[in-house]
Image 1 (cartoon, chains in turn blue, green):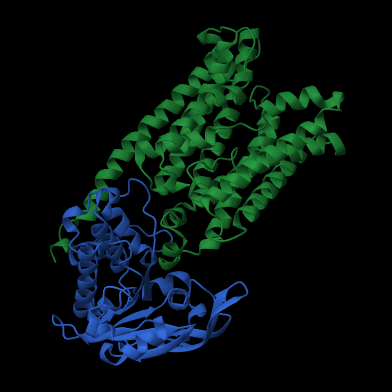
Image 2 (image 1 turned 120 degrees about the horizontal axis):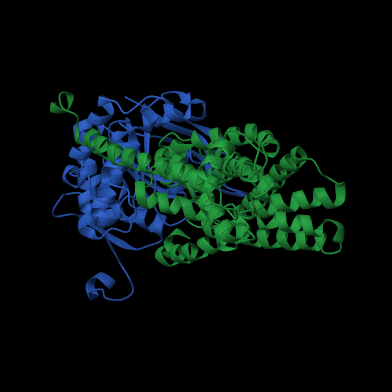
Length: 268
Length: 346
């Protein structure tokens, strides 16, 4: 199973360093969610893991080999990426979009192969998009569109899938739909999933492994039960909260405490 | 899986679309042939079919045959220049993800024109080969400058910043060109008619030296089709799919710059072909660059040949330069694109 890890990672934009000496190994075959306040470096970490951003110091390794020693297609056959806001060209169909996922598997001159066709069919099937394959992306709902993008990343057939805030801009039912789909993929294909998530409670419910970041460092990591605590929320988000077991999943659930709207016994 | 026996749904869709596109390809090739015939047959002087046949074979015995013999290289030049500009426009729209990208709007043609005028005015340049390299240098510098300015600040080279930088560069280069020509009565007349953009003076001697450059530009542009398909999904998604984003963008842009520079050197800056043609082709065959690029080249050739024919007919007994005709045809399409497109693309 593919191992993706970062050692003494330092990275940023221009002269603004965001990650300062970060060590991280992605648990293989599991779902990892990275959480943290805005500008804590969670997207920067994901961009380094995907080789979108060159580290200032330290390095990212895939199976013990430095990431920058992989060819572009070679890396794209092992590591899939779904950016936060990819662009769908006007008038492109779901099937067209998903078939882009086969690009790293095709040679410069090779044509569309039966294996490509099967991979696209599997990806459409797995994401429940088979019936919508000939639709224009523009004609889909937000959740369907996100499923189409995930299908594209699936057609790539990589061992690892990195997703940058896959549920942002989606309403709650579509958020649940997308996260359920990611769990299906992880369970059925064994795909290692790393995603940046905003919603702590959804992260705790869907991830096997939770990583909380603060100021370019990993502040806590481990099982959701170990990581999502009142102390962590206070440290990472500067927010007082109540953490109780989620009655539907048994995972920890965080309820923020504000200055208003609280019952008297909680406020005291 | 049953997909191993029968072609899967994606393969079927691909086959179906390929058939539709092949149909369009046949139509476009027929239209190109028709336009070429019109271009040789029609003009300010009416000629008979016998003169046309003789003239095409190189006969110059009568005035009519000689007229036809001149129209042949003119038609070839219009086809080459139109194909180059249509293809360059499609590539630039792909590279910048900007529906308004066009060799004219991004300042590439103006940069090439300025370089040529500087060469004529300050260095006494007269040879076409010198025009050619100077124009490509000017086009490349303008492209590099526009891209550098467009990349400054947060968010990198967004389509909006590129378009603004290009428009500003185009205006600055044109003003500078005018400033160079104004005090120079000796060269003003010649430069001005070249500046409008025309294929009227075409000779084989002028076309031949451009061919290697045009060929290199065509190849560079056409082989970038797949990378442009990936770039259309955004830089990050393209990188995630194994595209070498910076490299792909640079090589495609270089091809487009070579096409624009070479075309501008022989014909002067011709606007709007690179803008209009790719949009019309997208309506016909969709957004896949592997089809869009060759179609844009063919349709560009057709458009410029027809524009040239129109320019010969509407202003009889004189002629109207093809650059003016394309501007008349292109301006309404430009407005249509701006109105149709949502601001999201800018």
